[in-house]
Image (tube, rainbow, N blue to C red; front, side, top):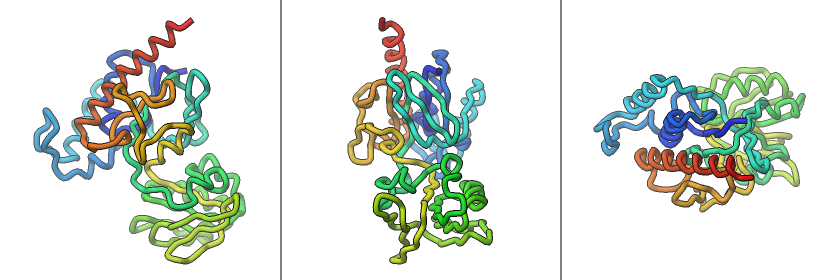
Amino acid sequence: MHDLIIIGSGPAGVSAALTAHARDLGFLWFGHADLSAKIEKAERIRNYPGLPDVTGQEMKESFLGQIEGIGLTLMPGQVTAIYPMGNYYAVSLGQEIHEARAILLATGMETSKAVPGETELLGKGVSYCATCDGFLYKQKNIAVACTSPKFEPEIEYLADIASQVTVFAAYKGCSIHRENTSVIQGYPTKVSGEGRVQAISHQGQEIPVEGVFFLKDSISPAVLLNGLQMEGAHIQVDRMQRTNLKGCFAAGDCTGRPYQYAKAVGEGNVALHSILEYLSSIQEAP
């Protein structure tokens, strides 16, 4: 049982992890080795204190240098579900489960919106985790909607299990070449089925399938954590970065505008201090 699990490696997650380390919390930090695609792709950043007129790449390297300099461990992996367990949370990464008394959602904004039917049929043929659910589709006809080539090993894994895989690649240069795999350039527009997935649609064409895997960088927080209160696409928080769920906090772009690095870093720090207060309160409770 850890004190805290931080989910996300953008500026808010980095800020929270640095403070958690300084305060000697027992915590896990999950995210991407490159920290944030949003930072990396930024052409020029002119309003971040202490790093005037830097490129996104330079900012990323500065963050990484500080992280590595104090020996912080950023664990790769994508969280696919979070389960409230009363006085703690269970966080699922594929077949791994980790537990903590508090969680911080610093997931950024979802880059690819859910298509009609995706959320409604989640757990009824729709999945976000090839490792978790691939075995359910042995010798079945499935589809995979993929937003990045980094997920192609997961497609290969699914191709070893399923009888037929239709890949929708939302990027150019998909390298999947298997006898039982076909690649369609573009992203699906709809998942349909009566109580369970029966088809997936693209450009007016409906393809019968028994399951659909969405492999993408971010999953809606509301999908990750059932019962989380949202304001449109953003997590609802108070000034202490507390959500409506006890022990769950959020910071960064996922809490709303402005989508600024300085705002995200500040919220990450505020959230961590709120978490410290929360952990102290539950330790003192009889």
